[in-house]
Length: 265
Image (cartoon, rainbow, N blue to C red; front, side, top):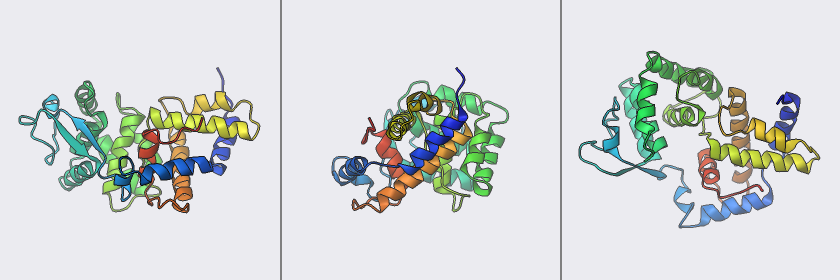
C-alpha cells in the first residue's frame, strides 16, 4: 500500500499543536503524586529498576565492571542510575562496547534471547567503530544523526539502539540538541493512538491509516525519531507548566507512557 507523505506531515504538525488533552495532564499528575507509582520518579528516573539474571550473560563481553558478579548472582536488579554509572565508567576506559552491554542488560532484563542478540551485534567487525561514531555524532550533530549510524548494525533495531543512545546521552556532559529518549513499540503505540485521535478531531478521516503507517511497531526512520523527540519534549514542556509539579525531565514522561499511565483512546 502506498502512503501519502504529505498527509503524514500534516498529522505530525497537528500532533505538535495538540499535544496533551487536559485529561492526559490530570492522569499523569495523579501518577506522579501516587506513592505506589510515580512519586519515586519525582526527581528523575534513576530508581527505575529492571530484574535480570547475571549468569545468563556469562558469554557476553566486555562485562560492565560495576555490574553484579555473574558467577555469584542468580538474580539481580539494575536501575537506570546504575546503568548511567556503568556507561560513565566505560566511557572513561574508552569502551563503548562495554557501555553498550550495560544498556542491553537493562533493556532485555530477563528476556532469554537478550544475551544472544547482544553477542551477535558485538560480533560484527564494525560494531565498536559504529558505537564510537554514534557517540561522537551525538555530541557534534545530535540524536538523529547518531540514530542513523546505529541503525546500520544488524540485529540491533531502533528499540534497543535508542536505549544505548538514551544512556549515552544521560552520561555525556553535552550533546547537540535534545538528549535522546527511548522509543519502542509500546511508546509508538501510544503515539499512534494519539495521532489517530487528534487527526480525527480536526477532520482527517484518514488519520488512523496514516498513524498506523508512521507509528508502526518497528522500523522507524530517523525522521520519525526526530518527530518523536520533538513531540516528547514539547509535551513535557506542557506538563512542566501545569500545576502538577512535573519534573523537567522528558524521560519521566517516557517512563510514564511506557507504564500505560495514559491511553489516548
